[in-house]
Image (cartoon, rainbow, N blue to C red; front, top):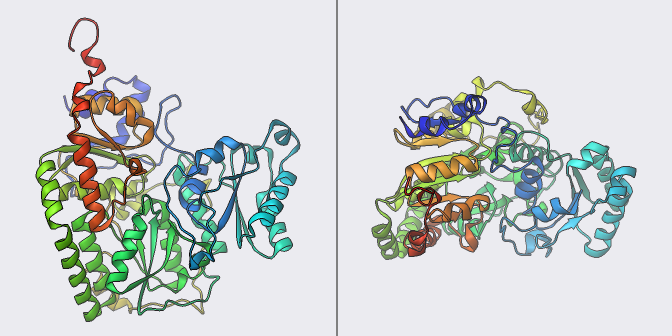
Amino acid sequence: MSVREDLLAKYSSKVYKNREKHMLQLEDVTNPQEIAANKRAIPGVMTARGCCYAGCKGVVLGPLKDVCIIVHGAIGCSFYTWSTRRNKSKADESSKGQNFVPYCFSTDMQESDIIFGGEKKLEKAIDEAMELFQPNCIMICSTCPIGLIGDDVHAVAKRTEDKYGITAIGYSCEGYKGVSQSAGHHIANNGLMLHVIGTGDTPPKKKFSVNILGEYNIGGDGWEEERILKRCGIEVVSIFTGDGSYEALKNAHLAGLNLVHCHRSINYIAEMMKTKYGIDWLKVNFVGIGATCKTLREIAKYFKDPELIQRVEEVIADELATIHDEFDYYKSKLTGKTAAVFSGGSRSHHYQLLLKDFGMKTIAAGYEFAHRDDYEGRRVLPSIKEDADSRNIETLTIEKDPKRYKTLYTKEEMEQLKKEIEIDTYDGMIPEMSKEDLVVDDYNYFETDELVKKIKPDVFFSGIKDKYAIQKVGVPSRQIHSYDYSGPYTGFKGAIIFGRDVTMAVYTNAWGLVTPPWKSISGGNQ
């Protein structure tokens, strides 16, 4: 019996019928098996997912440093998304000296507010925020009770714009919408596209310019990526949204190329900007040494500039030389070790490549909130049937901007370029994996315990919710959503920090002193 079959056999027939579609033991990675994804979790099963509000405010909007984001709802929801993802930020010229990321703004809805309505309380909170901070942009994020009682955050946002002459945006991102935080990503993307992107007119200063989409600067990741790109002579116009700003995002439509890092959370904006402004997008990965080299080379190939191509090679050579000795040391310690990786965005895919750099093998991987294309690639998009949960999230109809639409290449030139680099596409996680590897979508705590018990990885990468349960059964666990207060993990220097942290985790003898529960059951070892 395979690991998958053995694990599923422990479920009741009803749960088995659901979960078998979310779990694969790979047979042919070149022609991926279909996996169920973006479906509702089973009630009562302890999933690791977040909610729609968490995806909108906590992931996409939260890192914007010059935006006063007011959470309209209970204080617990505000606290849940307050600096928990370690989105580093610093006030600078792009944000006009403002940085509100360390703050937590909430209307703190009480029982009486739920009964009588909270719009007046929200407007009072906005007045207070304007008096104290004078932001250029205010965003309002709704939580579950707001959608239930019918407070109109969009109308409040419009009144705010009329009163103060600033940009104010309401988001109906109540937690119960969609099936996971993925719905919130989509809603946040829509709002940025409708109200922010394209409202500026400051062009890039350098010949080659990019936006980095789906980079949230956890542990300083975005700063390391920007450092490398600047060395190559490439200007970063805006970052969506780690250490990002409303002021910078306004000019995003003027960049020469979009780099999509976290595919799931931001691919909507990449597609909409392609349609409206003609900006191509390139799926990139700065997690991993080989992946970073490939990304830089593909960016240079896209712009087709000999000097840029040469400069990229010089930067790569210099960066590799700088980390050579440390990389060899950590690789000697980690080669042959195994790992399980369960994260969000595209990161379970990304980190497998970084682990491979160090000679490690990923034997199980999955996402919390992925869609099928995150696993199988964008080629499957036409075959995905839209269900009621998907229709609950508005899909914008975007048209070509007649004045600002521009393309760098003709249709024929683009077809030729696509033979060299992957423009406007994504192959997904599964093609990078091996036969017999496990792929688990929307993993839960029971499956986590069983996977640890059956496949015994040397290290388990996931979130804070299951980190300590994993360690208590003797397996080191790294919190891959916020890096356990470490980082950055991107680029060349980030890879070395990652190698150091994983080496420390794997060689921590404390985990070997823990007795797993299944070895202490009455009657002896099981």
